[in-house]
Image 1 (cartoon, rainbow, N blue to C red):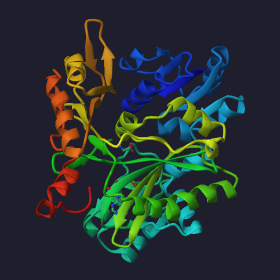
Image 2: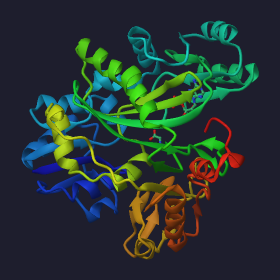
Image 3: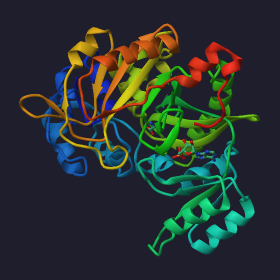
Length: 431
Ligand code: AMP
Ligand code: GLY
């Protein structure tokens, strides 16, 4: 079967790598892809905003499955257009993708279905926002409603910070909307579940590091590293999160006529009273996908096709290696501000010779070699018997990379390594 994979990041490189190993794969196409993805797929220049062009290409090349990597085309309804053309697609339609596209939509759904999440108010003006701040006090969390590439959230420890955040959101721009919610205390963890709208299949857990600096300091990023599994999410807590959060979400969307098909990524806070939902994403995480794919032992094409065709109930549970996978993102200096472009990247073969896998994100083939062309540039990924071993292996790979303009964290996995080392080094809360 021919497959079309949409996206160009490290997440899509990891998906392309796993798809390329599938038994039933004919030709794998990727649009727009990147130089790393080109090792596994034929790259094509297609604009994901041009639904007719995607459908025409899929028909022309007898594509049996379209896999949508990033959130923007999902929220834009690309999966609906592909499905309407009778082509199987991995990824939810526009209505169900609102789980990621609108924080207010998700909070209202949680309220309807009794799903544990922070108390909240949806606000549409500065006055409404101020009234909500009066109600919640500080600390408090202020979230822009729509997609914001990880930048629309302010965790305000003081009333002053919250005031600044709402002033920023309601700066006179028409149509602004925000969610103001109660601050949750605990450790964050990501849970992945595949669903075809009715059946569901747990698909692993991970923890990422969103802050740019060591010790989880500095500005938020798309993610500077991750590891899987997240052992802090014990089998009991995972079962609780699936039963109290994920299952009612899937059931409510199905009942309301907008079933979710694809991967549901639940960002959870493990609070003293149990797991609570922080947010949903309608796609794999980046770089969480890199560590999930490093551990996944099944046939990814068969699994994604079962999701797309509503046959998930007939599939065996997803198999993952018992090892820990850990990935370190190497970004371009300047990220998450303006990254330095064009820096030469060498040493990928040397890094892979250490046993690591290098997934490319913001790279470009400059003829005489690979250069940086984005914020997050590559993700060096390795397996180990535990988090400490995976961390050591990943950083051996990082050391082999020859890229002068690079920036990377030195402590990916610290929380789990500290936990394994014993209670005297026990970390604080909140990523
Ligand atoms: P979100 O985009 O909703 O995942 O929010 C980004 C980050 O803000 C999360 O990963 C958390 O670290 C933090 N966050 C969001 N909501 C809350 C909350 N209610 N309580 C504490 N931290 C939060
Ligand atoms: N790494 C966080 C995300 O993909 O949303």
